[in-house]
Length: 147
Picture: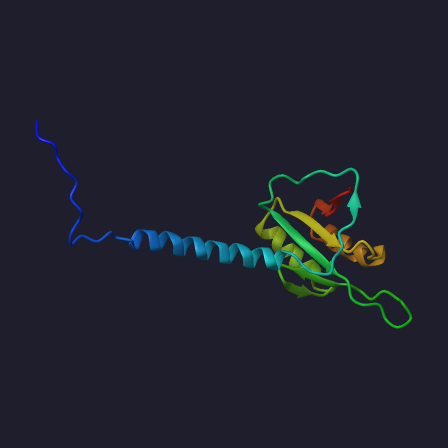
């Protein structure tokens, strides 16, 4: 019986091209996900807490509207918050047309409103009216668990 011995490879190189391709795909994936997450979240919003709430589950047809607070004026009167969707700013006047456009592309649209806990209802009401005019029936308010 003849035993084989292992000989070191000479003159053969390991092909690392597939490994580099995979690593580059992972880098691009994480850059895109980070960019999308950055656009979806807005600094300066303190989400209100709630005892009873439920998770939306499937988030594929979800649209998040951020009502970003602005500083109060000298008299302490709260200013109208800025409306932000996916990092783009909108006015209260053109919000209805934007919502109708999203509703046309996604018939089962779930709308989530993120507003600061100190935002007055008078600034949230026009957003709800725009949702009703766009025939969006699934409207939710984002909260965090109390505790």
